[in-house]
Structures are given as C-alpha cells and as structure tokens.
Image 1 (cartoon, one colour):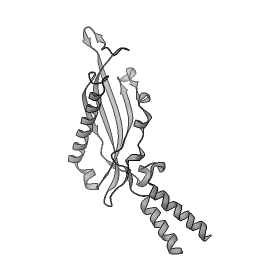
Image 2 (cartoon, rainbow, N blue to C red; image 1 turned 135 degrees about the horizontal axis):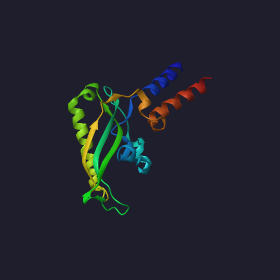
Image 3 (cartoon, rainbow, N blue to C red; image 1 turned 90 degrees about the vertical axis):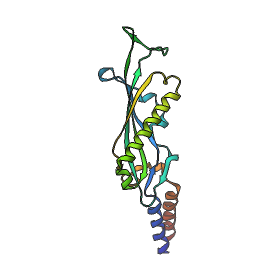
Image 4 (cartoon, one colour; image 1 turned 30 degrees about the horizontal axis):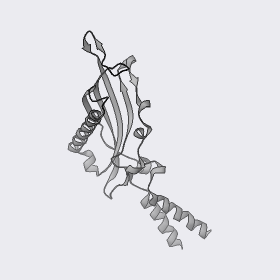
Length: 187
C-alpha cells in the first residue's frame, strides 16, 4: 500500500509541473496621450483580454520551460470627436500617442529563449498581429498607424506559478485526489 501512496505522490508532482499559458497573452496597458493628457483605456477592454485563458494551458515538453515576456506597442492615433470624425487644429488632423502592453507566455528551451533571432521573429509577429487587429476594426483602421512593437527578454517562470491554480490541468487534480483518497483509506 505504501508503494501506491508514493506512486500517487510522484504522479501528482509530475503532472502538476511545467505548465504554461503557451501562446496565451493578457493585455496589461491600453492608453492614449501623454503626461497630463494621458487617458487610460484599459477599463474598456473586455475582461477576457486582460487575463490568461484556461484553454491556452499546456504542459511544456521535457526539455522546455515556461517563459514569460512583455510586449509593448506604440502607435500614432488620430484624435476623433464623439461621432468618430477626426479633430483638426489649424487645418491639420490632430494626433496623439497610443500605447498598449501585454504579457505573454510560451514553452521554449533555454537556447530558444536566449536567441535574438527568435526574439526578433516573435516581436515581428506581434507587430503584424496588432496591425492586422486594428485594420480589422472598422472604427480603428483609419485612425491607428505607425505601430511599433517592442518585446522584452523572456524570463523563466517560477514553476507552476506561471499558471493560475484554477487553470491547471485535470491530471494534476486527479493525482492530488488520488493521494487524498489513499491517505483517507490508510488512516
């Protein structure tokens, strides 16, 4: 019976580790303007876009770890009135800065995480994705331009602190339940 308890404990430890929101992202900043004219718009972003999704949880491969990195994007935004018409000052269209921030995760080997070529390719893909996202929005396609994305250096997550406990795989939950049932049975 002791072997079964040890097996359950090992199973629990093995299945509950190295999980990651692989390819998942959450928005952490969204604003326009600068200084005292800065307007924080994060409150209008849907809640689902400001948190990781359970559907993105993956257990990384044996030689991979979960890495987290930041993506920031800046853009030129045309200032519009309440009707969506561009505001003009002295006959010129008024623009302001737009800023966005994201945190994202990915399963990678240490070598991949350290690769400048991978970092550049990832950042280029983010910039393209943001550009396409704005172009797809009827209200935004003509007022957002000059998007520039910058990616931070990937940092290895601290074990399963990468994934919210409520989002961890059912296999881990099963292992923990099996361990508890075994302990109840023995004592």
